[in-house]
Length: 549
Image 1 (cartoon, rainbow, N blue to C red):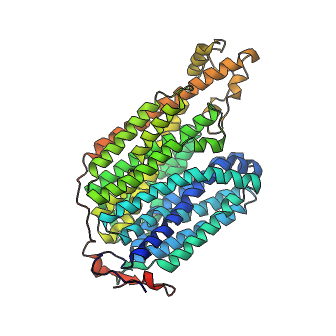
Image 2: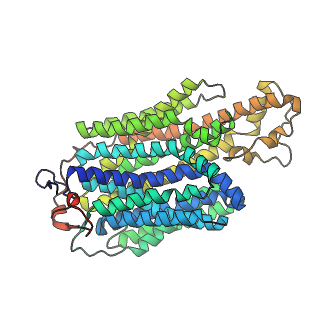
Image 3: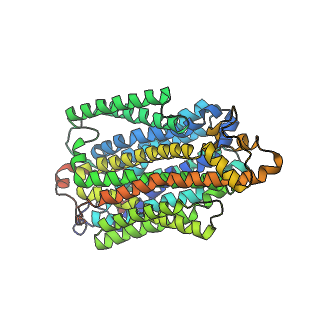
């Protein structure tokens, strides 16, 4: 049996160093499960939709997962503060695996949408609980070096996912992109059951804020549905306005409920905490730039450079390499020096610079130049993944660590959805008929009419998977090659101009972070943990993971 380090390590879970690292590995595996699912499903989804004859429900196969996972995040975080991380993480992984198996067995598009929603309910636990577990295992002064690995996990998943999805679909069937989650999930479940003690409040009565959970769910779900519809339609469409109105009503009801709740699911006084408010604002703004790059660049590779879906994922390697390297390095630097404010400011500035460079994107942009732009933007995004949760966890009490972490993740997720929707709106507006006419004329043919031909659906040009066929159908065959060059120029300009949103958000993020008060990273937990925590062990727990009171 390994020696238990009690006096030397004032942490919540008193176990050996080896057991800590094994737990971190199991948690990273659970996080990889969620990240891989998102990157493996996206490229294959068009083939799934074709197989299930569900083109009309294409967007909901993605949105059902996003909606349920986002709505569940704060609930898992709050419950984990009372009942412990272990049961919440086990519940999340179990729901995710059940949803994966059922998604793989789907025979209709409606079944896939429903079971993807069930997957999302489980996935909502994985990222916030994983970050909170690192908070249980290590003091704030140590966490950075381990939380930096979380960004690396997402980067690796982005590299592996497209290839694995294409390989399984081509050699077996699309059903296997869901079944592949099962062995990974079972390994993670086994390790967590075997190694992770449960840490929760002792002798504290918990009243579930049911009204808060319901109203929050209404606000989040309705708002995300509205944003989903707006991406593929118009902000003024009746369904979009109606869903936004319902989301606003849910938000108002939620705020009223939380002011009266004995134990609110999202403590509103967190927003009065300067550190949390600044960190949440920076996380929200950073996601605008991240969403713009991760969506529009693969689209540009596919449409302009005629890359396959899988190839477009690999062409993002410089961005992901910058993200992974800076995520790991920033965590190490923060842990070793205890300094993080200017590291965060510089990272947001790097994001702004990278996005600004992308405003020069054209069809003939040299590959090395594009790689440099992606690397700079990736370096800007990477530190936001480990450092913002670390900053928040360093400032809040241990009893609120789960709630504060999950609330930060919730705000970041909403920022990604809002940023993506606004960017798509800007892209559709940028890719106008006038820009197409001008670009094709500059390429050598000025025969396009002054206004779009009757029945031309410009929206097809601005959707993922859209086609320029409607435009080329009105162009004489001898001018098609010229028209393609002009179209690619217009498409590139439209994407380049859409980066302006991310630039503004990144600059605002820099300004926001200037208000951050840099506090020393604690080498201990708040004293209140000793009075309210009890360590509960699984009967299967081996010696190395034994905890002490």
